[in-house]
Image (cartoon, rainbow, N blue to C red; front, side):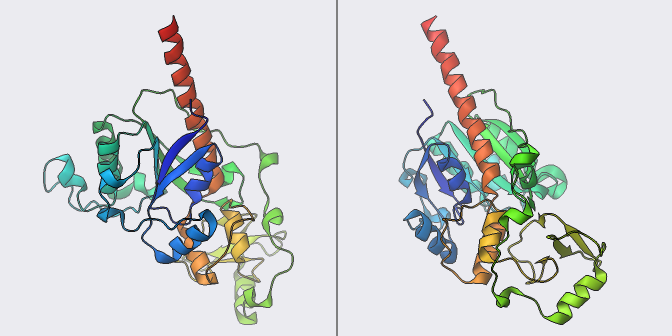
Amino acid sequence: MWDAFRFIDLFAGIGGIRLGFEAVGGKCVFSSEIDEDACKTYQANFGEHPSGDITRIPAGDVPDFDILLGGFPCQSFSIIGKKEGFSNETCGTLFFEIERILKEKRPPAFLLENVKNLAAHDKGNTFRIIKEHLEALGYHVHAKVLNALDYGVPQKRERVIIVGFLNNIDFHFPPPVPEKERKTLSEILEHQVSEKYYVRDAIRESRLRRLKDKNYPKPYISHENIAGSITPHPYSSALRAGASANYILINDERRPTEREMLRMQGFPDSYKIVVPYGKVKKQCGNSVAVPVIQAVAREMITALNAYENHITRNIIN
């Protein structure tokens, strides 16, 4: 049964997807990540240095596993339409690395994570091609955009989650958690914060001058939109790897601390911080909301167990 299972962690980043699957009984047997700073954080927290560039690792060298996990980068599928055939359509993209490992290893299930825009990219062609390729390998594919806000962290982060099973399993994405179980902004903010996180008076005054609602209750997090207006919310907008230093500010006074950014993504406070602020910011922006992944993982394991129980009953009968 699925109370213990093995998974691989591709495009591992700092291990957010791994944490979600470990929480429901999974054991990681292989990880891959190309960014050395992310590898440093990963090693500090999981005791292993991920293998490097997945494009250089033969599928046969990957240990046997039950579930493939991957928050893969979405590159443009610019070759679509120019040549025929599945391999030509995906060759040169990082999705191809997932495809070739699934093709050779044939695990019972997978979970992939990507930006919400994947579904609309290239007028929907990118997502259509991905789904067709996964189905061509024999997988039953489920996909849905989930928002981290609905699963217990104060961050509006919408991401498409793609789940697949070799068997035609009755799977449903997890419902949102009850409001009372969601962490509020007050709960994740630190009380003693160094002066180094506070912005200059000129920045603070400029932000407050443009604040849409001057009487908005604290604590709040605001971000500056393209038009230059400052909008407060009782949660963070999506953490972004490449955003400007003051993209989001708490009470228009200071930047979030490293620990606060990790908490916005649902990482436990036991998670070690071993790189400078700018790198933590990038790593959090590239990572996932752990509670979302954990909720999906739980539903996957429940569905896999139910399927196996059903098959066993039919054999006995």
